[in-house]
Image 1 (cartoon, rainbow, N blue to C red):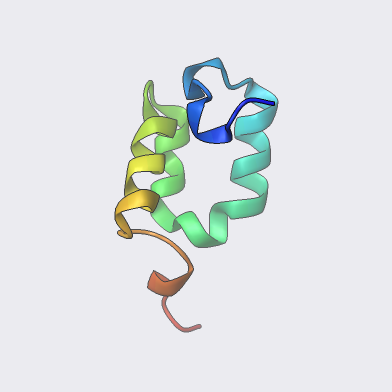
Image 2: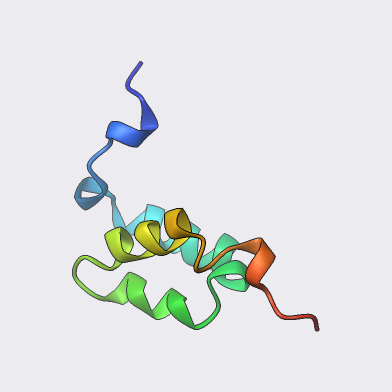
Length: 61
């Protein structure tokens, strides 16, 4: 089995992007717009890895 970290995110299908948008929009916040841009999924992954977005950065409702 391939290590998920080795997956090429450019191979991601539209259904996967729709899944991310549907299930993680509350965590991604305004960054969810990156999903519509070329290379946006890579940009989101980098923001998550760097800790700039994620559950700890959500504002209290």
